[in-house]
Each structure stands twice: as structure tokens, then as C-alpha cells.
Length: 284
Image (tube, rainbow, N blue to C red; front, side):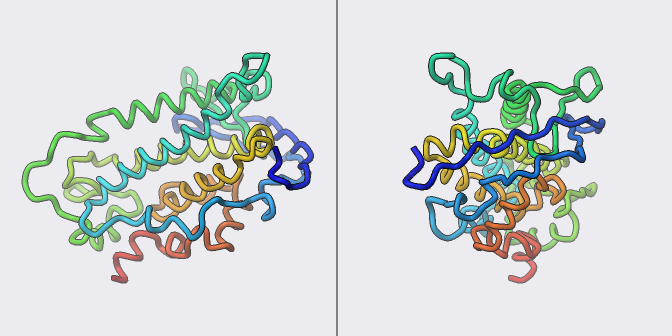
């Protein structure tokens, strides 16, 4: 199905390029060669959403909710949405019985000019996209179910709410720095590393979105008329990522043209770009 629009010619496959090591869990490397053919998902006529307005109301932390609790909720919700998109490329497809994203179609985890790699025995290694995505999903689930990172035991005493401590957090924990006596989520029992852990999880989720777009936007999302749902999930994700500074701008480069398009449309609201959560707290 093409929703009545003119057929889109197959988008070129991204180049698979040399890697360079990094101390992070999955690491990335960039190359100089990239196919110059247009990426249709970067064009406005192929970037619809099935919702109006923006996601700020779903993103902004309520005044009576502690920021650590809210970020934990956001992480779980963003993973739920991403998992739904990943299932589209992971389900067995047709007579072959293979998913659309498989060892043959996606021998590396690439997105435009980048090929993401995984640390194997301390070295950056190219692995197929399905293996990479499977490891990312298992890693994220293990983090979410880790009672140290995502504590479920009730905190005794009166928790400090966002309304009381977020202004102070803007000068200390907002960029991810911690001190001996103050960090995001402390009053709810989250560890000092919680904000950095959230950044790590969101970075890996972004890489999954980048691969989906560059390798699978046409097949299957365009063909089954689900590209608007993919866009909705991605805009929601980027709004959260920018509002809480959870994914670095450099990391977003493979999808920057589409992000810029959604910014121009104010699908990604200005509040998410101009200091985000902490700017809103200091101005209120």
C-alpha cells in the first residue's frame, strides 16, 4: 500500500564503513563515503504524523513528581514505543520465514555514514543489525529490571518534589554531573549514576531508530503505510531526548535532516530546544 501517494523508488542502502574504537558499551565509527542519493524520509512530503500538536504535555515533568521517577517513566515508555517499531522488522516475513531485518539484508548495524559496532572481548566488532538490536534490547531490559538502577522499594520519609529541587538541580545535576549530596533521583532512591544510565539507554534507542529509518523506512514501513506511526514515535523520542538532554547533538547527526524538519514544523517544540526542562524550571 502507498496511501494514494506516488510510489517511492527504493532508497539506496547505506555504506558500511571502517570502525574506530570507543570505551562505551556499543561504539560507533564514521566514514567519509556515503551515497548521495536522497533519503526520502528526510523530505517533508514523506514525513507525515498521525497526530496534531507536539508531545510537550507528555514530556514535561509534573510539578508534584520527582524528576528521577519521571525520567524512569519516560525511559520505560520510550522503550515500549521503540519495541513496537522493532517488532515490525523482526517478525517473520512471507515464504522465506525470515524477518525483514536479517543477517543477509543487514550484515552490519548501519545508519547513513555510520556503522555502529559492539564491544566483543574489549574490541569494537561489526555485528549484524539483528544481533546488535537483540543485544541492545536485552541490555535495556536488564537495566529497567535492575532494582539498583530502577528501585521499586518505597522511599521512607518525605520525598523532595521537582517543584522544590529542580531549580537547584539545574546548576548541579542537569548536565549529568553529581555531587556527594545531590543528584537526580536521590530522594526516590535512584543511584548517582542514574542520569548517565538514562543517557546511555536513550543513545542506544536512538541508534535503533537511525537504523530503522536508513535501512527499513521503505520496506516495510512505507509499503505497509506505517511510516506516520514511525514518525510519531520518533518525534516523541526526540522531544524527550532534547528536553532532558539525554542524547548528544553529535549522536543525532544520522537523523538531523528529519529532526530539523520536525523542529521547523514545531512538532519538536521550542521548549525542548531552549534549555529544556531546566530552563522551564528556572523561568517559572
